[in-house]
Length: 378
Image 1: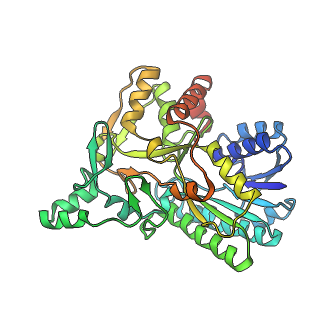
Image 2: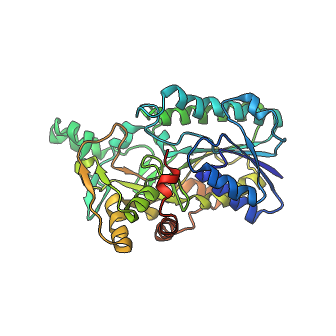
Image 3: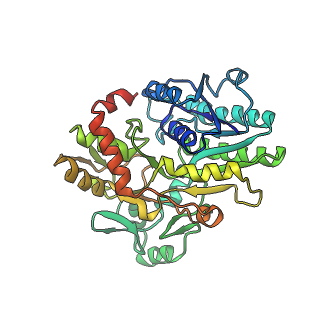
């Protein structure tokens, strides 16, 4: 079995490559990366030392794929993973679409040529911003939780404040399709606006599904929650748990943004290596009857607010001041937790690494690599 991982020197790609090499040593792992991302050279060295064959190339350039050896399965982990990409002035919208959509098309064409399987790592950001903002939340201790009242903060609260009580109660008495206290399920709205990042990934999902049907290819789409773990690159918009822990340890500036600067916004957290059992099972035993799209995340049991993360950091590293900015950014939502129940029912998959253990591993990495944010930040 030969597996190709695109974006192999990124955090998720390298984590999967090392895990597959360790647990399935008879599989050959090859990887493609353009090595542009800061920090990728560190992963490049360790992967080579672990016996992974690396190729320098860019998924946006079909000619870069022509020299790759034929593989039995492709794991598509090459993407610009920032929800602010294309609108923050650091990456152009064209660059984002080329990375996340045109690149996927190139790799899908390769899968068609090789007649091989395809796993796409997608994102929770394919779910509708407006529908997410309409989920009612309440404050419980130091975090937001799903509630039955009008949202406590943000654009939804402002909008509802302009309506009368009867309208407000009627709106939130109506169930929201795809939502439960367990999280966001796969049938939750994916209608725009999503963000340019989310739309590029959603378009890639649709194309991957069309290729599967048109060319009879085994295709799996994994919508991931917030992935985390030691060695994650230092970017506030791409791995908030890792960034926060590294910044706290280094006494770097931190800020609660939006929601009145409360730090109550909640995300789920999944160790990247916990993807391995599901990915390997789908490669070893593809199931045509299985749902093509599944959520994979830490879920409600592995979720936390920034304020809860700060409390953990303070206990581990000592106190540190966090600034507050009430103004929200365009794609901020107060509560985003994925429900992975479909993956559990279909594949028997569940997250394995407890939340505290994920944070501890990141903290240990931060202590051993005090300059990590400088090394890995663009």
